[in-house]
Length: 244
Image (cartoon, rainbow, N blue to C red; front, side, top):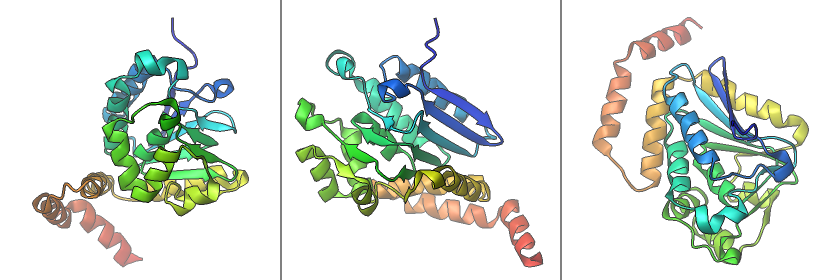
């Protein structure tokens, strides 16, 4: 029997939307959702027409409360980390449209995305230390590389919630907007991405993430740069710009 509340993936006109769909339960993530999410990522990798992914939640209160509390002790294993690592490594830009507050493991899910757009009045809360959970390596890496050591320590070691302005200040959010401007702001990012050359975007995303993690391969970056200079797409786009 298919659970109607599992995460949904819709694809239209080069844009994929992945939606967490348990609004009455703060869009929590169940262990059974993990293979569903991995299946969605496999579909995206097999769909070359998809240029950008939007990850969001249903409702207007919570983006996601993270991993189901009752499953943490007996069902929290490396499957969650593998799912998040797969999301992070997708070769297309991922926009996290934070329709509300974000808690627990869903904070790391948001950090796996390339852009995070939030609504005013939202907050972030990482309760791992309060619960007695030592966070997994991939999540610690993402917190530090995305937010910096000081912000990561505050979130992890004090388990204090932070509000929307601090979310923006520490770089958790790229944009903080009124709810009335939320959808339009997301679409502004989508349109900008669709206007870019997808192969260059995928290549630069890979190298940006690797460089942030300290894995700098200058030879590979140089090769990608030289390949772009020889591409027919660059010639076409330069010609279009020259024509005005």
